[in-house]
Length: 152
Image 1 (spheres, rainbow, N blue to C red):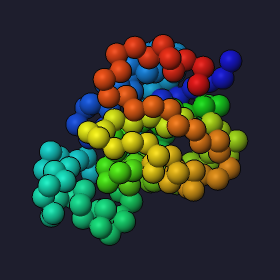
Image 2: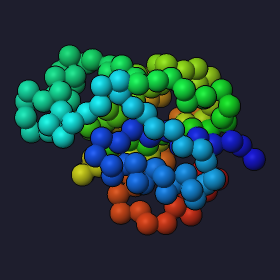
Image 3: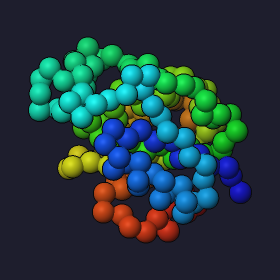
Image 4: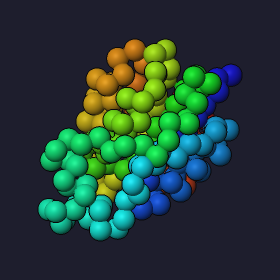
């Protein structure tokens, strides 16, 4: 049996709730991906062209991580969960995957979204970690039972 980590980024708490439910269902450890400077509600207001998330996206700025204590080397599989921003993973996910060696690991991508799919996020993550097996998990919106995700 492989050792699993659910690593997640959540700006508003929605993804955190889903990631913790997923971790409980699959018997995984949990790690929260946190920016060095936490996001405020104003920072993630994508409808404001001057918000932090918009400025980061336009400049392709990878936010600094609060820590790099995920212990990726201990795990065979990483279930990576995040909200979809700009049709893909937030740039902090790029910061996270750049901080560790995922060679030989399995990364299963999960997300929450108001309407976007996982396709672009999965392909972007595959490009960032070519030595890992990156697979599409599922959108977690509306999921109340995680039983289907055991053994991914």
